[in-house]
View 1 (tube, rainbow, N blue to C red):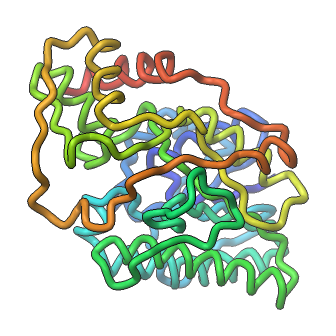
View 2 (cartoon, rainbow, N blue to C red):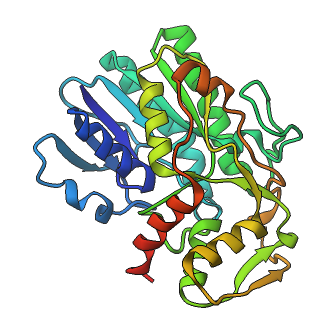
Length: 313
């Protein structure tokens, strides 16, 4: 297959490029490098089945030759990024989805949309099944990301129903691993950076909000299986092992061997406005239709991630 991966120089996109190349496919990575980096794909340059195009997918996309699959992973994904680039985030979810699914339609390609657990907002149901419609503030600061992804899902389903495009939607829960950016703003790189520098780990709102953390290779496996499955409706891909943020901070300190302490702070910016109080995927559907569940434990995943960041702090 010849596969287009948008956001291909990003954290998740670069891991997907590796996986598709390892499976023998030809990969075209596309990225405007707002949050991605060519450092993430430098080791792939020189592979005759890999190419990179610097391009903003919110603009018209031209790609010569056949395309068998389009995976739309382009988008800022952390609060730091989408609050700094709110209009770009809305555009890549709307215009970027229109352009990428339009390309898939023109090429007769299968289309996979990278959606997010954020479509559930600050949920009133826990764990969150795919049937849950969510609890989202459309005009809050996080709405630029949440609603962009919700709109992208609606457009994907419209193209499936009206144009007959073969579409897949993955709802991605908190994922971590090598190639995350230290200044990403999300909890994993924040805590790891602070622990490696011996700084206090800053925990907001008492640290009782929950998250569930999945290692990147588990996510890639789930995405790969979903693309080649017959499932046409959204599928959660995440780790159902839920823990509080303060317990996660303690695990980072323990596994890293850091002398850092935990400091509880009151947030003073809009990054935590409408921040979900709980987050845990119901992965019953992924188990049933994909035969998938995460296999990398938290300690093993964190050790790999710590090894990556030790040379970059």
